[in-house]
Image (cartoon, rainbow, N blue to C red; front, side, top):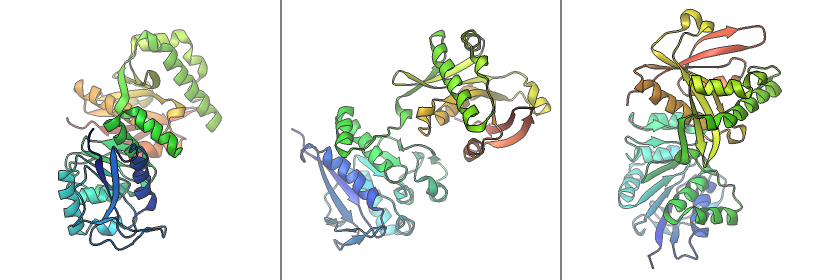
Length: 365
């Protein structure tokens, strides 16, 4: 029988209570009555009580000087992270402890502490969506910031978004160590809806004839949603008759995103002249069209994964830019593309619909 893995959860003044207790409880409930995980709290200087943002008092079990070397280090966030990220004694301890641990997992603005501890060099990372600008300042230039995901797994280093995303990331790590069934059972006992980050089991590939019905369903659902939400037909349902979609897949470079055998997204990449953009068209770009994600999977980062896949495909074709158009009168969608670094190049208006053209430079490998 193996020895229980030690899980140290860092606490400090003005830490977020749920950033601490969420992962703590996930590992404790998954511990098989302490046989697989031994979970404890640790503070830097002493075992004096720590006051969280919400006023909850936590009594650390260990000070850092006496803390058993953990196999898993949890670094939570909170308002206090903005101060503690400048505490070199703490960030040095995080760095040294992380080097000895098998895994380090940050929650929310705990990613700021990892950044200042020098642990995000060359990695992908995320944090609370309201603190992404702070992480951009704190992280090295080699760090790739990932938005709109629950967590990012680099192997040894895992970062999660805000608050309850820490539970999702903890369940993800538990699944890595003891199988998905253990995490599903743990989530059930916690009565938590485990939101798994789909990118790790998301397959993106060229569409085939067998995907026609799934693509057609995605496009029709999107067209109907646009009409119900905005009152006009950006895409018309009659344009997605089966024979039309069959021809679309056959005659174009169409890609689908598949998660656990379910078709959850699609897009196409085009290279030819686009009449509506006139002189704004240029040939050093791939043009992404009909980017669509299943409505029930909204917010899981699938669209972002399709964009990244399209970028790599466009780069492989020797082009330097990714261009896409979207409904001009959808503020949230337009803001999303701007947040991803796309720059508005122009607008096209017709009697019943309009579109914005966005462009982003394809990064080098």
